[in-house]
Length: 183
Image (cartoon, rainbow, N blue to C red; front, side, top):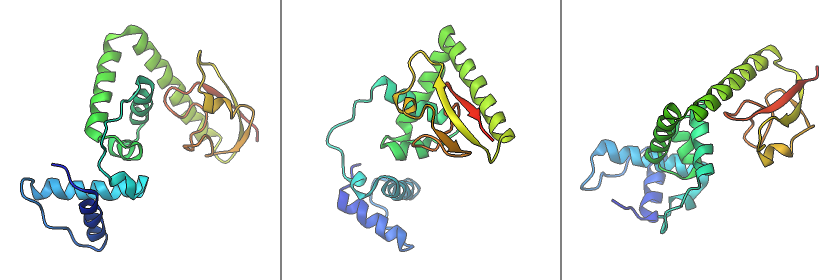
């Protein structure tokens, strides 16, 4: 069932005032209340315009899908990633399921996942060991480094700071950037 922007906005306002709107016909109360809470989180993350009905479906590029899948694989919740990127969590779950299935049957991809996991685990160990220190962002060992990370090469950060999402080198799944601890 499609809901108008005005209806969604009214539901969000009612929810914020501590009242659930009446459940429309054709949907269970549990499902409808879940939708309302999802609209609230979507508006908080992306603004009220995100509640407007979409007239066209976004065609996601494989790299865009992979980036969202990686966020889930590194521990972010499906719902958090979905809401912040304007995709349904059920669609994201399908992408993750397909990726995992592909990885189990593709030896090259499986080796890549294992290598990325080793790098990620080492980064978590290093973070704990060097908590409170400053570091320099070093170039990536990847064949195709991420352009946004290339802009950070050589820059000095405090522990816990990093790229636009707050990730330190090697912290995000698949990142192969290096780190030099300074203090």
